[in-house]
Image (tube, rainbow, N blue to C red):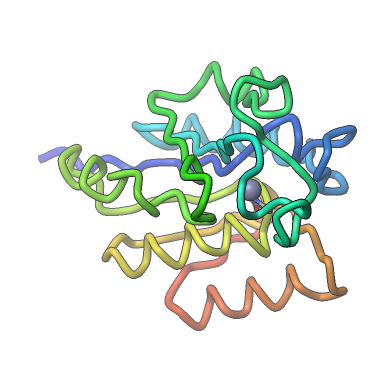
Length: 182
Ligand code: VGL
Ligand code: ZN
């Protein structure tokens, strides 16, 4: 018997989260090379994207915490070309103007898709450690997948100093395996 397929979840590697973007994560482009290397270790690559309509409820103008970002149809929403090229599947989240979604499992059907493909284990990287990576990894674990986060392949927003490190601790306590490098 072949071993069950492993999926890489490349979270929100989009122009607005990369240096120069509207919600740039510092050193965010450092995740691309490790994600490319990880893609060679899995049989399925899923890219998630934050995909908001104009005037999304998470934007400052609506009393939300964030500047406008990843607006559908704008360059800022586009996935980094290297990640786009290796993705077998792209899932969009945060598309409802009235609901924010940090997890790639939130309203996307991703858990069912992975189970249908026989996936039991997921490897998670991307942006940002303290928001969408954290939410996606915790949801994967909750959905029953063996879940691993690769530190070389994530970067944090760190609105408050230490947010990224605290998120890693929280994921670890929730049963997510933490791997340092590819
Ligand atoms: C994210 C802030 C707002 C993320 C998405 O992808 O981590 N962060 N929307
Ligand atoms: Zn967002």
